Length: 96
Image (cartoon, rainbow, N blue to C red; front, side):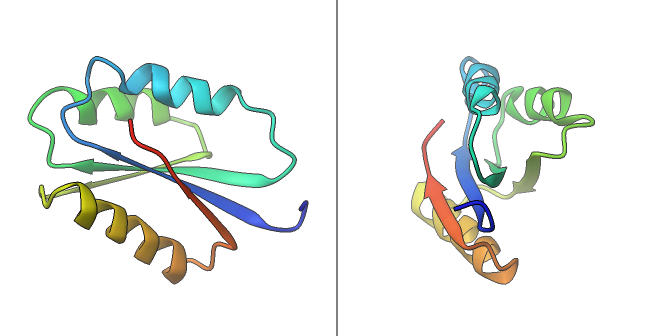
């Protein structure tokens, strides 16, 4: 599985208490595959977006998208559509 690429979709809404640990835990993984974290901020009203910005500075493994709140299911579908449009071979979805 060394030539495939993996997109890990993480929807986030008002997750300021946990999002930093979630991202850092994913970044600690030593996978034998090229992967990116797609963190979709679903219109959070707390500091979630700011925390993601701070962690993602100069980190090429993190893709952050801010969008208006549309709910958990729609945000996941948004992430899968992103994966299809950007030709990812594998997708894994996890909650924050």
